[in-house]
Image 1 (cartoon, rainbow, N blue to C red):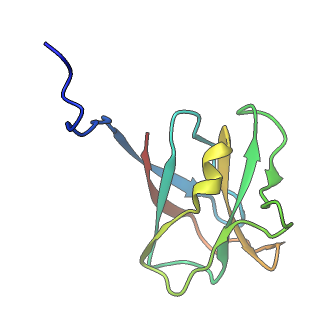
Image 2 (cartoon, helix red, strand yellow):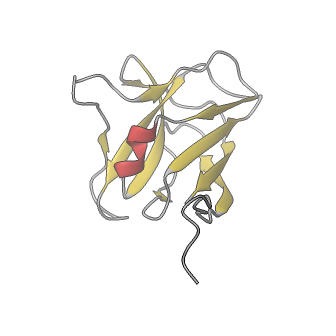
Amino acid sequence: MAANPHKAAYIERSYESKFVPIVAGASESQAIDFRNHVMLQVHVPAAWTAADIGFKVSTTVDGTYVPLYNEAGDLLEMILISPSTALVATPRVAGGYFIKLWSQSAEVNVPQAAERLMEVVMKS
């Protein structure tokens, strides 16, 4: 029997949700293994020291993490309008193997006043 050329292609997607902390006094989260994912959503807690969220990336989990920029030299970041918000990262983040969420403002570290636990949802 011939394949139906009008049948829509189906791509199975899976989701993974985990909690990622930024410890008190720090500005970076623990590493997130993003190798098999294409989308990142971050849920910022209500208690949040005012800052935007940038991304630091590395090709290995224990490697050196560097800020992630686009081809124009602009920092890839999520502008936080208010705490207790869910934000979706730009698809350009999908190229990162390991990612750390970075509490920052104008590319300057903003240490969190207390431990902040963020839920991240990743889609493969």
